[in-house]
Length: 290
Image 1 (cartoon, rainbow, N blue to C red):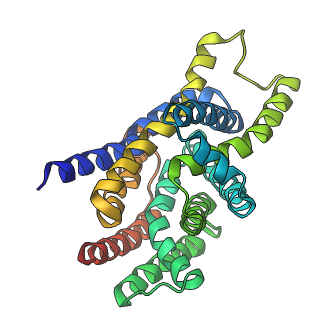
Image 2 (tube, rainbow, N blue to C red):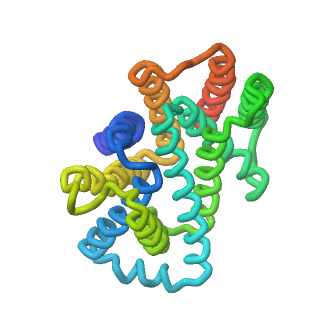
């Protein structure tokens, strides 16, 4: 194996485990703030840090060109809204001890992306990928029948992330530039939301709580560091290997939820996971052949 390939694998694994372990620990730790305030800080500090990074890298003109493109910025406003819902749902899942449900969503998102690619982009597929999509729908139907309710956390995580990837693929904008555009668009809404929290004395971030405010500031770095690692790894190893290694994220989240935080895993939910794990194995085997 070439040294650069080994570096790419290391970076991708690091990003996946960061999202699956360090991200869980951090966002669980700052659960003293409500999920809305956490997303407010994640948005604002991510935007601020990206502005500094983009300026330092001399990519400011690239950002301005993208931001002035009405079609691209309209689509990036939509993807920004999708990523905000995704972040909020995931953070909420931690606050109510439903990390297993969120991990379910990240397991099925790549397979759901295959389904969206077939429907919206008319992408070519094969029998095994179709089987993996069918198994995911069987698992969701099983949960619906057994619990009498839609597993909305997992579905929201999967659908928002899949649509996000689908639209971003059509925009063809670098990840850092795209994320900066998205967070810049979301920042005014985040500031308005924070103003509402302060009016109702619901905010944690304030000069009266410097230590807690410092903890919330790190939400930006906890978003950007794994993203940077994954992008660099993705550029080196390619989409197939990166997609396979990404499954470390929901796997780590599953074990964190079940073993570390003691979330319940009954037989019906386990059966649904087994269906999805089989779908994932089929899907990964197809990626390996590409």
